[in-house]
Amino acid sequence: MDYELAAIVGFEAVIKSSDGRFREMRCAGLENGLALIPVTNELLFELAQDAEMSLNEKTPEFFGSIKPRRLTPQLVSLLLELSVFTPVAFVEAAYESGAGEQVAILWQAHKIILGPTTTSWGHFGRTENKVRLSDMAINCALRRMGVRTQVGKDEFDTIGLGRKRNTDAWC
Image (cartoon, rainbow, N blue to C red; front, side):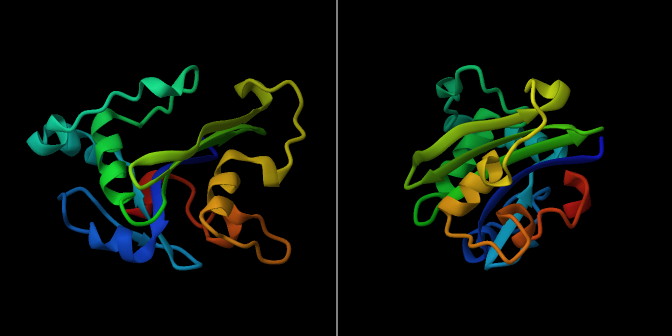
């Protein structure tokens, strides 16, 4: 895989306040006052074992045909908690050999305010390879969070999501 990411993205103060809550939870700083929590297999396993998170399970039935690979009911519970005061996004991206897919869902005050939205191209499902950067799922969520692009960059690159090539590299 050329690029793979599954993460929670939010304002740095909110994301960093969760640092250390779970043994496998890590926080990494981004640009524009944002930070991310990489959604690793180890974090998902730990969330699944946590009794409090299991009690709050909310099955994401509202996604229809969009099925994020790493969005579990326990992770939805964490996203709901983090969204109390500011927006937080769950983002997934996978690119390989000129094809790719992005998924983004944005929560605020315990409600989804954007998505789930997806962008696919190449053999991931879209027949044309021309996708406007501004229309890509993650860019839409970041723009809704207030990210303003730098000259020559989209929202994704403005906050630095391209710095690492896979989820585990953010740990």
